[in-house]
Amino acid sequence: MNTLGRTLLATTALGTATVAYAAGIERRRWTLRQATLPVLAEGARPVRVLHISDLHMMPDQKSKQRWVAALDELDPDLVVNTGDNLAHKQAVPSVLRALGPLLNRPGVFVFGSNDYYAPKPKNPVRYLLPSAKKKRVHGIPLPWRDLRAAMVERGWLDLTHVRRTFEVAGQTVFAAGLDDPHLRRDRYDDIAGRPDPNATLRLGVTHSPEPRVLDPFAEDGYDLVLAGHTHGGQLRVPGYGALVTNCDLDRTRARGASRWGAHMWLHVSAGLGTSPYAPVRFACPPEASLLTLVPRPIDAAQQGSAAAGPTRFGAGADVR
Image (cartoon, rainbow, N blue to C red):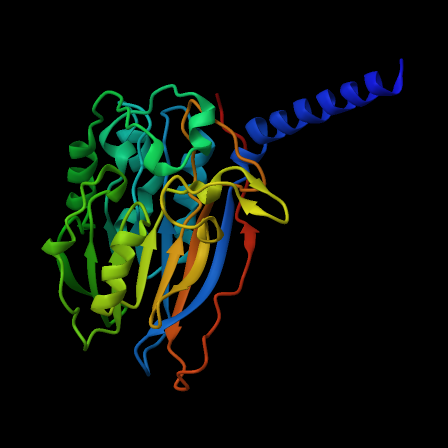
């Protein structure tokens, strides 16, 4: 075999191995990402927030359900779910099994496009196109109302276009949320205005982290906005990062924490699932995030820490 033939053979083998890893191992490598964010009022005690997003649950994804349920052992003070829980019309019971004991804790949520509509097969090349050039193609309606009713019945707050004040670990949280900006269902005017200045935490919640909704959250004076949707890029190149974000957010913010303006922090979850029609992840394992919120530094020049990295929290492969 000549040099060209050996090169082509090696390249083919490497590509096959990469696809096999991305589809068979990486997308089931459940990971807990941790970060410390200085967003609370002076003198507040730390608050532990579990951020869950983009489950894209199928009924047969048993290990995902077990792993998410086990996150209750982290003893979070508040659970925030930023949407895209469903990927199948019969997945509501599976999502509720996954959230299980977490539903006994204080929680808030908003929904994403894949709570409302099932995914459909698409040309993978479309994923690499700018968000503005993608035509929305919806699948069949999903039973999001059933999921919402179950969450609300267990005490979680639906933040869709409402402003709510509640207590977490003896401290006041002011929170507001939006319907999915990816589907242009957001109506920021419904929640516009300064949040409670006396709250320990002023929290914004949205599924898709579109800059056009992050800007008004920042202008109104929110401390932190939590979002999902990007899957962390889903396919990341080591040393380069996410190729795309599937929205207008720049790719450097595809996952993790960053500053948005002079006061506000943004945290984007890389999520725990994928579309069943694109079941691959590369250099971007599925994740939940445990955020330790601490008071802002007295010295305004200090930026605080968003440092920390991914850690494993249990493991397992889906039972298919």
